Amino acid sequence: MDVYPFARLAEAKRQVAATGVQLIDFGLGEPREQTPGFIRAALADAIEPMSRYPSSDGLPELRAAIARWCARRFGAELDPDRELIPTLGSKEGIFHLAEVVADPQVGRDLVAVPSPGYPVPARGAVFAGLRVLELPLSEESGWLPALEAVPDDAWDRLAVFWVNYPNNPTGATAPLAFYDVLAARARRHDFVLASDEAYSELFFGPEPPASALQLPTLENVVVFNTLSKRSSMPGYRSGFVAGDPRLVAALKRYRPNVGVAPLEMVQRASVAAWDDEHHVEAVRARYAAKRELMLPALARAGLRVAGGDASFFLWCAVPGGDDEAWAARALKQGIVVAPGSFFGRHGAGFVRVALVPTPQECERAARIVARL
Ligand SMILES: Cc1ncc(COP(=O)(O)O)c(C=O)c1O
Figure 1 (cartoon, protein in one colour):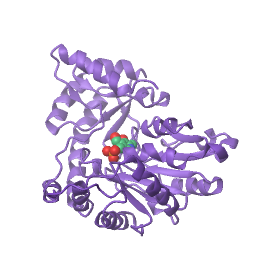
Figure 2: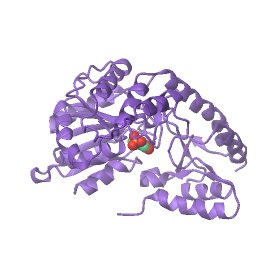
Figure 3: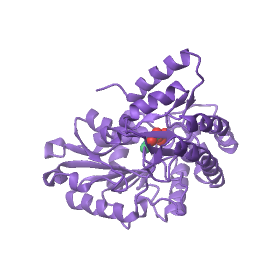
Figure 4: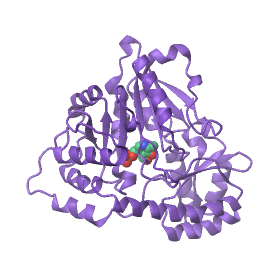
């Protein structure tokens, strides 16, 4: 398997930093906001004198809090015992899904993933011994996958079809009708529609993004979400998977083997986080302010925002179309961005700007970028 592209970027950053240039890092999509105080306090309060193994099904209190949030946010009535399970962040759950549902003996040997895209679904498929079918996302299609790119005979070979909205790296959202069409196909051809919704709470348009949890039935559907972005808790490792009870049951059978239950104190802090929306509004406001700082500067540098208005990413078409060259030039001035080709060949020609530096850094970066 090839080197994770961000490892290459880390090396280039190290070299530029060694020449004395101060870097402002819009490259990695890791939130750097402070975790709200009441969540940290809930974690500290939950430290027990005796440390026991956490239950892999998660605490009933946490499952209930997640179900309450899904009901509030998406109008989804989920049975916390049968239709959801906490995960150790969402990354491990996303990685493991192919392994759980794969059945190459009956010819289910394909996993469809978007390109450009978050690399973990494809890596999970490869580790599970399955083949990856990359589906191009393009600006013309609103960054929705081209279903006509799936060969007719591939539909019945699919184990999982991955979608991710709000999308990393493009910031695009998907309408509920899109989930509806894909879920109907999932039932017809008996594959799993897996919807990664890690950025569902970071939106800057008038309407919150749709979720596959809003579908009238969750048969053959699973949804992944996380507190990492919504509640600025990437280090806590707390997320969930929800959907078809048959799939949740399969995950419950698999997960005790892997040892991926979140720490109990993290689960208790997560109850506090899912039950509160005020801090999420504050997080959105902070990212919105950074967008306002960076958007005019990027425009002045000749970059065109080509993606959507959700997530904390700006997906920009670079003048001349050579994303790696543009990113290398920006890096020399101390501005780190991720070339689009890091996310698959269909990302070439774009750069991804993750709005994770502080507002002060964004102000400084805006002045540098505008001159690029
Ligand atoms: C699209 C997408 N999905 C899932 C994740 C995983 O996040 P976590 O494991 O912190 O929940 C990320 C993290 O960067 C992401 O970008």
